[in-house]
Image (cartoon, rainbow, N blue to C red; front, side, top):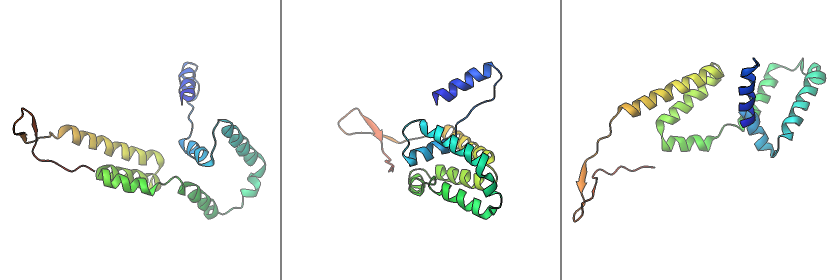
Length: 154
């Protein structure tokens, strides 16, 4: 990440295009057990060979088959237990997660993430503008005051 950031800083001074590394590629590398950046070199060579020599074989592949390949690859990136845990911890964050998920699926990646960021900013504004009031009570025999209404946190 530091190398990508440094490339962007140096590239901005020399009018270069912005570089970015895909986080999904990092997830694939992690799931494959890759430990070093050599896996990126092997992956780029594999993609280059596929694009140069094997694209003619994929020319007549139906779009349904290509879609099934993509769905199978993305299936490992969806974490259902984390979504259930998000539901238990914070329902509003779960709604944001669902809006981002369905926005990316139905519209586009940029619009889905923009929807999620907008809802998150709305949530932050709600939290900042709502004041917290508590009923304080004196613990008998001490000078300590505590909240009388105890709420259960998960």
